[in-house]
Amino acid sequence: MRIVDSHFHWFPRSHFEHMANRLEHPRAERVGDGYKYFYNGGRGFLPLPAVWYDLEAGLAASEAVSGPETVVVCTTGVLGGLLDQLPTNDAIDAAFAYNEEIAKAQRTHRGKFFGTAAVPLQDTAQALAVLDHAIADLDLRGVNLGPVTAGEPIDADRLDPFYARVAELGVPLIVHPTDLVFGEMLSDYGDALQRTIGRLFDSSVTVLRLIFGGIMERHPDLKIIQTHGGGLLPYQAGRVDKNARQPLPLPPSEYLKRIFVDTVTPQALTVRTALEFYGPDKVIYGTDYPCWSPRAATDVLDEAQLSPEQRTRIQSTNADAVLNLTSAAPA
Image (cartoon, rainbow, N blue to C red; front, side, top):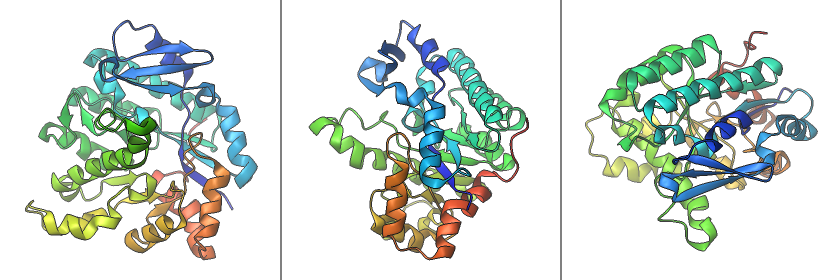
């Protein structure tokens, strides 16, 4: 069976070399064969060792577990939204360059590697230009969405044309946790609070803003992928409905059930809960490589005791559908 890993990370080294030449934050510093990426005015940083830049090793690790037909979908991960901390013109230039490198890898590994776009949102018109170039010209298969843009919430009214265009293009928004908002306040215990609850809170707040802000109501064709089993939301959907104050036509949980979620969660119970809440056509497989391992990711699916039909949907057909992978990137 063709396995689709919808949650795979690889970074083009050229982006970090560019960031390492900056004198102001955000910027990168070279550390051995990797980098430290400083953000939030230099108060926070991400350690990014060499494994993040070795695409061949990542593809080999995936194939070793899932077989030679494995397909990976590359996302920005925790770096989502960091470009918005650059001056607007610098952010646009960096996004064009980043997306070109991702598209180059997609062409090189045609049918095996699919890329998703980085789109800084400080300026709506320029964001639309980056979006159209990434999807219409470069054939990338999704758009990474950070929790905030230039200090604004992600549901700012000015961004509605951006969401309308994403829906029109038919690609999903990918909501992955970052450390931009909650990282500093939850840095205790060796970042254990942030890496467990804080990051899930980050992506969950982002999704709730898309719902409460009416974005999903105004754009019913908008596709959204939330990583890590839907974060905190499927477990508190009743509370979300109980406390909602927005005048939406449907309960918030009905919009929530339109969202796709992945299986990047080291617990079989979470996978089963996602299947029950979102439905068998809304759950997709992911490994979070190199943060997690393909072996651990498949072991959790084994522990969840899925039916053969559920397994096929999760590991293959659902991701193909939401990410438009059946049409391979042009050579």
